[in-house]
Image: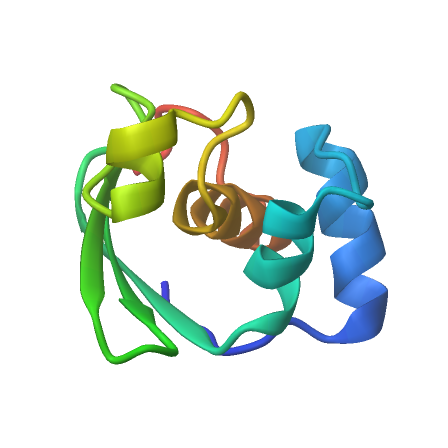
Length: 98
């Protein structure tokens, strides 16, 4: 699984599919920032961020190694967790399909 920025039409469908608030700033950043998502195990992903940093996301634990997640634990996750969820929805990956 690897992408950069989702196309506009894909954004709306994906946001609806994962139940995110499209007006939330973290969702907006998850949709618009350049990120590459790479699966690296069951429920584990590397996210290469626009900043040049790499973060590790684990969907099973709903956790990310980024400062936003570690310091704030946002309700629907940081932008990296959201991006992984959006990519999985866009690709039609269901829980346990990996």
